[in-house]
Image (tube, rainbow, N blue to C red):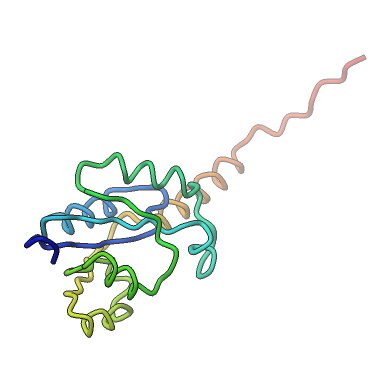
Length: 150
């Protein structure tokens, strides 16, 4: 808490920004007075999964353009201990694909919320769909030989 205000932090890669990202950020906004959103740097993302499709600076700009965050910052570590201490975080929100991973923040007095993405859109499902559509399209290309040029 800072100046009597509840400070909420949420973070993510936010690659190929989609409606579930927006829902989680909107949910986080509703939990407090000040919302800080961390956007994972490309280096951080590459440390635990494939590189993002959208570069860091563009993902940061997308999240900054939303009406819900008060502050948008780079996220350089999956350990949020320092961020919680430095920014007086009261509540932490992350997708439920990380269930249990951030329970250690509770020992620092932080309420941890695992936002249920549920079925539907995800960056991974979007990428998979693009690849499948490309492969399907590639198989339908007209394979006519190029005409001879004399």
